[in-house]
Image (cartoon, rainbow, N blue to C red; front, side, top):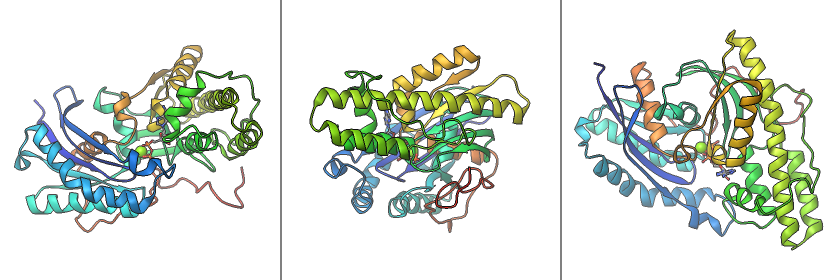
Length: 358
Ligand SMILES: Nc1ncnc2c1ncn2[C@@H]1O[C@H](COP(=O)(O)OP(=O)(O)OP(=O)(O)O)[C@@H](O)[C@H]1O
Ligand SMILES: [Mg+2]
């Protein structure tokens, strides 16, 4: 029988202070011994977005409590834990350093292996917490800071097929909600208010829909929403129509780009059967799930979504990525630093900024 591996995971890359204790079970999936998240929702609500200095301060205030709670709830004493994993990037440096430094200290003082986790690898491997999914699989990562199609070949082995050339999808949801004064956090509110609107009311642009492979763009869509939002003022029903039309446009874009990514995956892997994993905070959106599930039936692929609690930021996925890297002996030294940018595919071209050719 394979040895059970237990890890403490710590996550502070943005606005959630989180810690979890995860054990790999005999089926190769995870036993969630604890999964504690302290959200900074109220701190940032009045500003309509995350304020880095406030976020870092809130991490400092909460981190000790959150880690102690995770250890206590797991009923595993620290000396029975096999290693510590903490998010080292990408994200806000002032926030990352809080969890990273505490994780390094715990590992050093308890003489345990340490893994510096790429937050995006946490999202990429998160479905493994619940299901055994064979590599390679196609990943659609839709979060607050990233929007990418990747081939997940193995732990630590990623090939980027496409990415956003401007805003991330979560960012587009958040900005749209802000322009319509629908509250923070934007994504869940757009989803809620869309249900009250007519999704065909506004014809919004679908940027680079017929070019640039499965790369994506949302900036032009955001500008169009801003233009319409200025015209409709405070008319509630029109706001709901605009939210619904925005959500519908996103679904059309994801449909088209996913079809392209599926073909690219088949061509590059030589594999006919495709497992598409949709991960990251925006993967919590039910209409996106319904839309991609419908597409999966039409063009015959399998789609998997992590449980909603593993879509947004959490430390369970960080502990899990730590376990998967520990199994491959991908360990880090205590001197490892936080990184604000950190691409999963080290060879992927940088797709933002002036001079970009599509
Ligand atoms: N139901 C929903 N519909 C649409 N978007 C949503 C929903 N729930 C959450 N989101 C969006 O998900 C994003 C947060 O996701 P996540 O926590 O993974 O992002 P992040 O960690 O800030 O960014 P990254 O993972 O790229 O570093 C926010 O932009 C939020 O609005
Ligand atoms: Mg995230």
